[in-house]
Amino acid sequence: MLLLRCHLKRALPQKVSCRFCAVMGKLQSKFKHSTYKYSRPDGFIEEKIQTKAFQEYSPAHVDTVSVVAALNSDLCVSGGKDKTAVAYNWRTGNVVKRFKGHEREITKIACIYKSSQFFSASRDKMVMMWDLQSSSQPRQQFSGHTMVVTGLTVSPDSSQLCTGSRDNTLLLWDVGTGQCAERASVSRNLVTHLCWVPREHYILQTSEDKTIRLWDSRGLQVAHTFPTQQHIQTYCEVSEDGHKCVSCSSGFEGEGCEATLWDLRQTRSRICEYRGHFQTVASCIFLPRALASMPAIATSSHDCKVKIWNQDTGACLFTLSLDGSGPLTSLAVADSVSLLCRNKCYASLRFSLRACSFTFTLLEPSCCSEASTLER
Image (tube, rainbow, N blue to C red; front, side):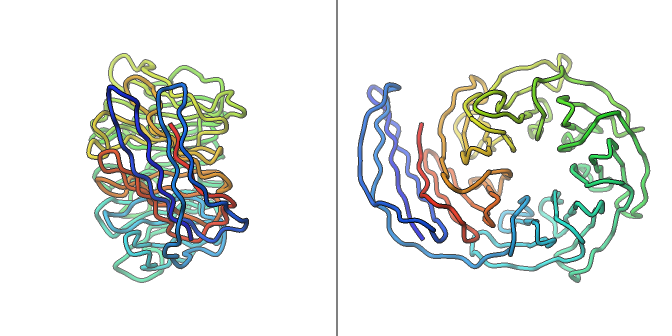
């Protein structure tokens, strides 16, 4: 285990000091402890300090972690290739409960926030509802797709569930009865993600056909289709006020690899783009105002980086590089000052932003080959 601290300071006239701590799993290659300080053309002075050992947590999964989501301010739920959903206390590093029922890899998790209930979707074409306060058996099962379920979102009042699949269909479910209420299909609409708009009847959806669609759950009809993008749209999220949404795309060597901010109100036009990743951007989220002094967005990518962006200007505020960690494919807000991030190396990471302070905690041992670095 390694603890790495980096300090990032802006040259005069304005000084900004950032503290960063990373708690790593076992390293499979040697890490050279070093201290260096240098200036960069953008006016920043970066300083890296020698690392030291830190606590190691027990693993929650025995295979690749696919997704992580926040259940409440203390607990997160992760799903993986081991077909298991795990409720995990990220503050203590302890597994709370394991849920088994799927026959193949879990692809999506959707939580009813601040409750004990969550949903899991899988490559076995099934969606299951679980309750932390009841048995480890599924409380409800939803069967109707003919291919892997790749989209999952619950309505603001928790009465409805919407699922999407690579079978080009969206299904709307009654949570109480487990019955399918509506079905819609669009040719070549291979769903990648779904997100319910807060306090509205609308559902946002991204697709491998490079489009973003807004669905009206009342009849499950397409209400709006955003301009077709150049690359596969991998993920989407809606702001807390429901006025904006952000999507992200696939790409390689900097081609594509962007996140895009959209207006969800009358104009439904593109507001801003966030470019700087070099591989597929797999997740994008709005940061709560408690996490930043300005409206901000976080993205994670297959290039092993998490980036924090100024939502209004598109400027990259910080980059966390987890070199050797594998693709970073899921981000979630844990509480008012913490984010959860997971990669494909059996690991979920927790990091905290308080003012200009970053604290990263590894929830599960990682197969990373190098230590993390913070860069502007």
